[in-house]
Image (cartoon, rainbow, N blue to C red; front, side, top):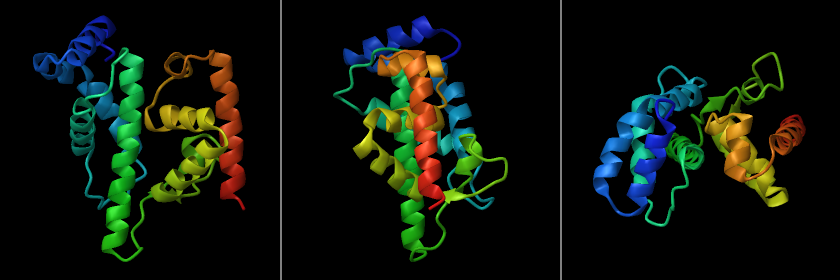
Length: 188
């Protein structure tokens, strides 16, 4: 996506019109950025984790292009959907693994460190994070979306602001509020 935003947007718009060739041309443009996001998201995984960045990228991409009701609005929108898909895939994977081990084996994620709340690692599992984001969304949906876009999608403040159609200052305020709320919930 970083290579040519205009080309990415053009291909996304063509994909909205049902042109499958546009989807085939899109993957090489977005692959490196999606893989970087996946690598970042999987850093907190245990060493024997079975989901690899390449598999996460491919699964997310397949789910995204299978969306028939999405009207792609450009690169930032694509990144937002990618963030959401990767979150769902990671949560689904963690829940499946936990079910296999009867509740054991939840993926630990250094949440406090990752979102800048603590200097030392304080792991929280991905399912717990998903539950907290779901609860946060009930209280303040935009705060939860900001966390999802920044944390799972790796979007910048400006990209998040564009996606949510708010100012960068609003994103910064929402990010601070969401982090404070998450910290309060995690330290109860």
